Image 1 (cartoon, helix red, strand yellow):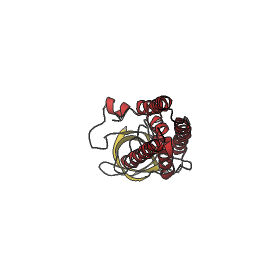
Image 2 (cartoon, helix red, strand yellow):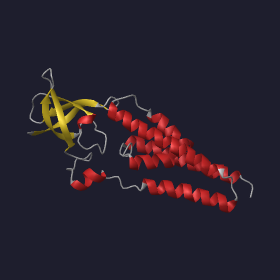
Image 3 (cartoon, one colour):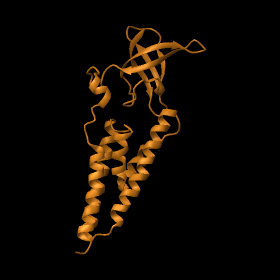
Image 4 (cartoon, helix red, strand yellow):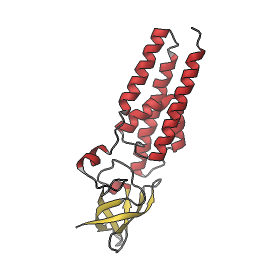
Length: 200
């Protein structure tokens, strides 16, 4: 029998917490691996449905966990559970930027190390995102968010965009995304300043 409850405790860094069932009763331990669809990270207060099992010591554990509501409070449907509401064409933006910068460098005779730096930093950032997601699923040591943001600032943001869409990682955390886009704007501003310094 499926139950419904709310995440009354959640430690995102360690990937576990507790579900308090609606109507009262024993709260259940829940681990990130118990979520059937990991299209976004759980958060304190999320409403979920789940099945209850008891471990070897008789403690209740939540299994086959699914989100019952979106973050905004609306009920989950087939479209939202698959797409997660992420409408930004991240991979398209990443490819368009790198290709466009490369074409400009060829046309204006700008140094080709500029797009090469973005490609290298993007590859490095992409790998760090994938490693961080794998660590989150294994409950292992995570890559600090400050490290991911610094990589984006140093030119790895196209790779970050690709990883955010491909791995569905860090693309729905609002606070992370706000800081991430600030890093992108700062990097583009620095690039524009640098290009302006190149003799014509």
